[in-house]
Length: 347
Image (tube, rainbow, N blue to C red):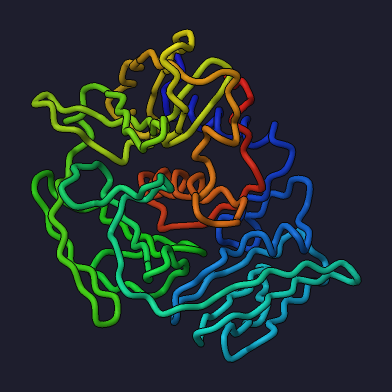
């Protein structure tokens, strides 16, 4: 029988392949895998609507032959040079609004972006659930966290603002950090962003301490239910960062998903497994019955794209594969995929 990690990796690659378009960039010039090809519109759509002052982000231009990136206001958004790996870094240097135009020949696409001063930050688990899951008080394997930025109006995106003693996992659109050398037990990590700082208590758990999986449901209000999966130790401690995936009837989800609860709907079986918990043999899948509104609408239920932003980029797929890379001893990379339909049956 295939291990969960090998089978899971195959599931992800197959799902991305059947989506019709994919573009993986593992941070090296010869590591690109092109699908249906980039366009100015697909590059522009990678941008979020709002970024933090002082942050930056990097766009991948692989697939464009003669791209041009311009800013309507360089005092708000500064555009760097396109490097040899077809990446361009944008710096968010002033408060205000600007338009970024991506061009190739006569083909153009424009994205409007606002830059604001951050007012607070949160240290969260590296996935795009809504609401975000805080690191504080959680226990996890392969400790990894992300720093999320906010002002009074909501989420601000970008990277390069956070300082911590942990190594940085290379990410083109977020500040993500990992530490693979921690001993099992209670841990503290200090994070500073400009004048703000925070000390977070969490727990590190060795892989061989995880003996089972558990499905969690969180009521988000108005009938919305988020489904996560965690590991369990012999003592019953819930362990995060296990990179679960779910099979739900004809749908396939990674890391998390949402559904609309309908008590009158027929029961649906959720099967959860994990990509990462395989060093000591595969854990048994765990099952749970849910009642969800029918027919399912993938766009409504899937949490496979970052909520609150315009980017169709599969950022959580990037974080999932980043976790796999950290496990293997890699030191970070970034991934881009144009879409990952949850309505495909993967088996």
